[in-house]
Image (cartoon, rainbow, N blue to C red; front, side):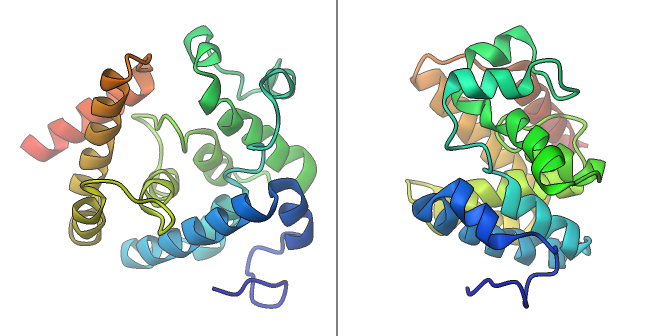
Length: 196
């Protein structure tokens, strides 16, 4: 997929995004964008909002942990204590702050999507759900069971989300990692929706 200022609906400075992300992370971002737009079209979502959220979801990824903690300190996206201990996810709240401060994003649906694309959240809206899913199923990812999840999310979005949360849950348990209540509550909500 070719991205340039002319075919981008989001009016973001793509050169600025590229310089903040670096080449490899920008390639991942383009693949997340492709997956996100495909899902958003099926769900009838605002494609400009989805594009903006996808392009900025990893904008803080190259920052070091101490920089991320400084960025999110005293912001409205400040994480709780447990989240602060799960350092690989801190680029998400920091990304929401950077999207506001560096790119002038004020739309809460977009900011929420960036903020919760790692852990998820039981109350996140559809745009956030799409970015969460698109980041997981993007073409640059490859592991056992992923093709089945990709196929499922195309035909039954909420069941696909449930499969994503379950896969993440299993992985974190195998690695003996913390599982944040946001992730747990999201999975429980999707499980309940599945059984209703």
